[in-house]
Amino acid sequence: MLDAIGADDIEDLFDIPDAVRFDGAFGIEGASEQAVTQRLQRTLGRNSDSTEFLGRGHYSHYIPSVVDHLSLRSEFITSYTQYQPEVSQGFLQVLFEFQSLVTELTGMDVANCSMYDAATALGEAATLADRVREASGSVILVPDYLRAERRAVLDNYTDGSDLSVREFPTEDGMVHPETLRQSLDEDVLLVYLENPTPEGIIEEHLIEVGSIVDEVESLLCIGSDLVALSLLQNPGTVGADIVVGNAGILGLPAAYGMGIGIFACRDDFLRQIPGRLVGASRDSAGDRTYTLTLQTREQHIRRERATSNICSNQAWVALRTAIHAMYLGPDGLTALADRCTRLPAQVASELDQIEGVSAPATQAYHFREFKAEVEKDASEVVSELASEGFVVHELNEQTIQICVTETNEHRIDDFVEAVREVME
Image (cartoon, rainbow, N blue to C red; front, side, top):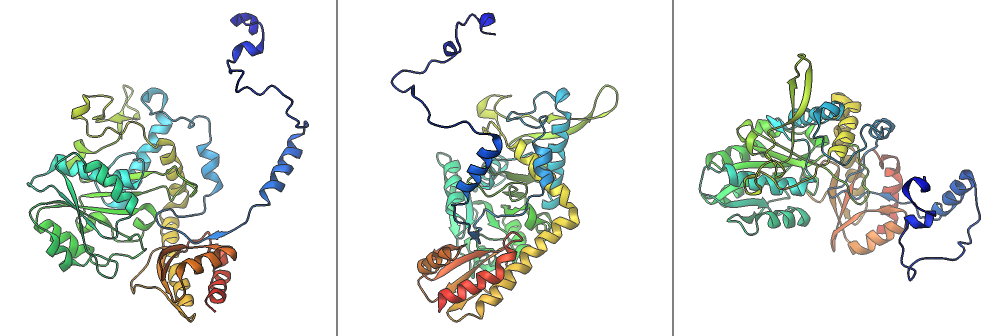
């Protein structure tokens, strides 16, 4: 091979400056694969093993082995968009099924095949509302519980345009219809809220909220996630025009990144939806086929006329999410969501019996997570729990937030006992 490419030595293939090139002996003895694996396992065994009860937008759900097995097939391993439908039918069908899953759970007419994450999906919802606006409003109205990172992305999307972001107050951690009504005026273009909220509270007034927003002819955008949507009120039935959120809770570990957002909307906005759409059609032989359709993205038309300038997509992540959801099926997905309501209620009830703990801090129905007020300094509680092998989130000086799913269910009794000891 060296002769074929005209090289005299393997070193000719590398151009590493002498100043930074290591030219000594590595001092590492050769070892078999088994010996290397055992050494790595011993090293990993020195790490502390903690059980996390964190949440706050990133949730741990058990990932069936079938997700890795199928998604790691060589046919699916690509970071590129499926521009050639004639050689991408399998992947395009998976993305079509992902879109179908999202539309069914959100109650919307159409969904794209992924966004980067929930934050960018919210930003794109604001720009879509700007493009389809029927009124003169330019204000994006958001609740005061909106996470800082999502607010930062939304501010970035609206900066430099005539859009502005304004907060409205919530009561007891949720949106109350009359409070929202007082915050609405002719300047409001889009109202955004989340169900469940960042504190795990299930919104109880969505139907009234939908009616109030419709009265002033503003658009309503609801943020959620695929597991919650399988059990909670369908956004489409309460008057939502756009639904955004997080899908990566299915098929992805909570490991520092790699998320996926969902974006769905009414059919009226079909030609303004950001991201990519996979459509079903027929080929010359009459067989069902799949292809990218309505490609109003920046690669295909002039930048200033594109609906979105997000270039890449999360296709492979959408594949993993679709596999996980289809493996669970409708009944399995609903059963998972049901556990996400029962387990927090169980843990909150047990913690509330501990002197110095009030849980949940807000009297409402919760999904996955809840707040607990503690009489001790919250930072001390968090630190002492960490030393016992449990990780929770500190909200403020007297409040912690706790997330419970099926992945930490087996440690509930130990966790409650640890809190009891810390509070003594």
